[in-house]
Image 1 (cartoon, rainbow, N blue to C red):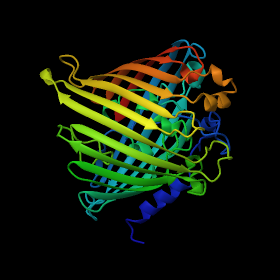
Image 2 (image 1 turned 90 degrees about the vertical axis):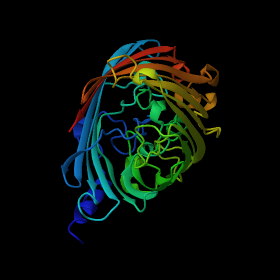
Image 3 (image 1 turned 90 degrees about the horizontal axis):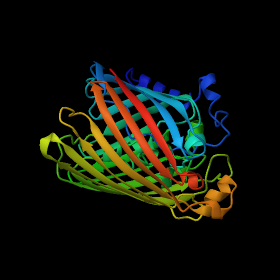
Image 4 (image 1 turned 135 degrees about the horizontal axis):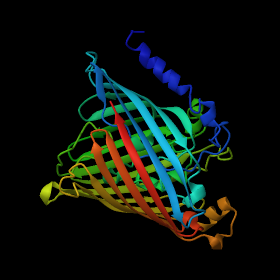
Length: 418
């Protein structure tokens, strides 16, 4: 084997061995730490959470971030109270062209650490998860993948990665904190084994794009908590197609999330096939659809306005969330003298199937409301080149379908390294 391929093979084999929950103290906080418990019903972190990479040597660069927050449930929900959360992710990127080897190759590798001071749903009681960084404490390899770009319009990727890095990405919703704005809850609430935060998974995908169109398809393992099982515990297959028109200043056609263009319309379909639905933490085979529409406009005074609509459906009668609707606005440069700040508002509504929710909670179906809705407003204040402070407030109606309306506040500090 050529000397420059040995590190690539070693990294992928090392990641597939799954060092998830390798830290014994952190593992105790995870109900799934023994490998047999349920995978928590958690929606995902916003897509591509690492900041821009910084060069170490030709071809090799690194990046890192830490997000810390105080989550508080002020009223309603299950009970009042606060808890701290922290997520840190550090990664390497190796570009074969910049290293003087072949064109189009890129290897990514990252490790993620999660610390939770409590169980957020024990406070707010919501199904959609008000904070997109809350998860049971863990330390794991999060990304170990290789991408090959064959032409300027065709690429393929294989390895351990997060579905929401590339599928169901809503660019104008990325600063909203509620998890449903990151990935559709008709995926994550109905399929706990979705390969996304906090459990990325093994998969492969192929993508293509042109100036006004994009398309991609992928298949990912159906139980990412057990990475070594590969596809023995089912799989999830996805396809997404999009149309893009108009140009905006920060367009990046090399971004495999395909969120370029002033106006974007994307639709996707997915199928989850599970031969072992009786195993803890897994769900029956199911399928669904989703759609994302976005628009971007330049306003006077250097401001910019973005809008989005998200929709999803998985109507099988055993799914607790058959339908979803999300919408919102993002205003960049909201005040004079604050060009790097942004203000975002959003609404995330998850319709609930009373029979499925009631069965999971052990209550009567008549006690479950028709939907849970989160209303959010958040402000991201850039304090320095690598420091952002973000206060967030959410009002959640019928958390979990059965709890009193909740008022949630989050104060988050985002630090970027390198």
